[in-house]
Image (tube, rainbow, N blue to C red; front, side):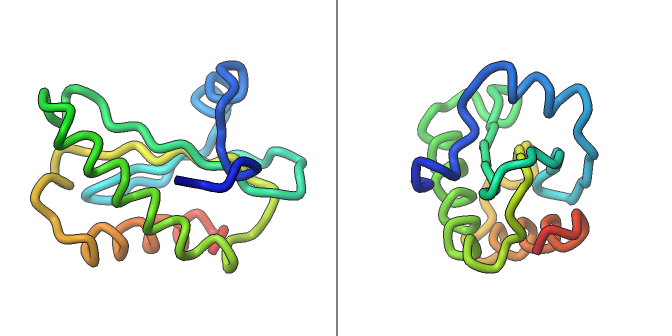
Length: 112
């Protein structure tokens, strides 16, 4: 779980991120990134039912992606809203693979 200041929660913030955010995509995950003007970077992880119908699989992917981001919070630039959109290809990947894909996405977005 992310610390409270690093959680992207409000519906209006999420909609603005979808509408005006810059997209960076990878095999396992896509990222939407937008400056937020705050002193912290906020994150949200989305795993839709198209990825898997089983909630157990979706929740596991969500927890693994959150942990990969949490481990890198100290090196991520402040002042962005980031949404991680997990793709179907992420199912069955190890934590190290998911961590590498998320890190690559953050580097492409130039916030790591």
